[in-house]
Image 1 (cartoon, rainbow, N blue to C red):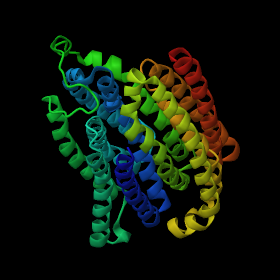
Image 2: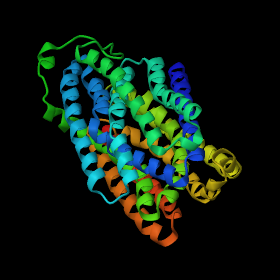
Image 3: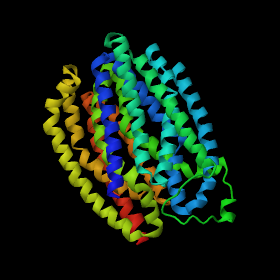
Image 4: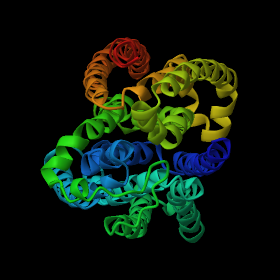
Length: 424
């Protein structure tokens, strides 16, 4: 477990480090207007990307946790479902790009970024396969690869064209080029799984032919994966939709400044995601079915450790950020510190919520989690909209802090009422 965490941490933080450096270069190189438009377009496409795979990757983790090797029967219909979803979501993006009220540059960025979806879907599905096989070195390398390629291609572009000629459109093409590469490479791994080439870990490999021959349909996949798909969508609405909101209400320059805060918070929030989504989630599904005592021990210990770690990181942000932001991002972003300081108080809350919420992904409890996450996500959007009108851009930070607190409260209530009280 410790060695796996080490590999994942190295890969994740190396990738996050390159992603952070890439965003810093873009923030310093592009104008506020250009960087804001770039960030808003990327956030919009990222927001609908989970609808393309619609939770299939996370569903695979649950299916194999419950069925063992018999869950191979879900792979082929899941791939068919994903391909249909990609076509549908691309259509929606094209319609939005052409008919929504925005500038020509924003429209062009959205059209280019539409193909970014292909890479993200491939990354999700291939990551789930590596998790099931517990090939953590491969998983770490796989998730590091797109960040590394974007960084290398960006540096090459700066070397060839110089920073004065680099535009948001140029950078968008770099992101899409990398996405296509990831789609082609990840697709090969998924096709191997379709043929039954999966080295499942933690389960008996005896195949129950009667169950295996019961082939699910695309509709069956939708009926099983939709809670995980909505979880991803609601998470992004909760965390990233504010960039789009700020862009349309306050303009691209304000969106650029808010994007810097999101860049920093994304790097910080990556740690609990790494622990619970990449390392522990397959085990949590297995413990929920095989060892509930172990599940509760991990839950309680995780809550305590996440709280302590969150407090330490929040304090570090408050101390270091006022000096680091002007140095790293430039003087034009110096006034984002107020927004970041508000977000800092949400860090311990977010960390503990990751631990508490992970237990709610097991069994039928995931539907409960979807309901709560959906309510909070849309409440956050509404609150952001209202507070922007009152206090400006800091309103989205206050909305985020309030919604994170509410989410933790209802997660904690749900776990103690529905998971451990009834299940133990």
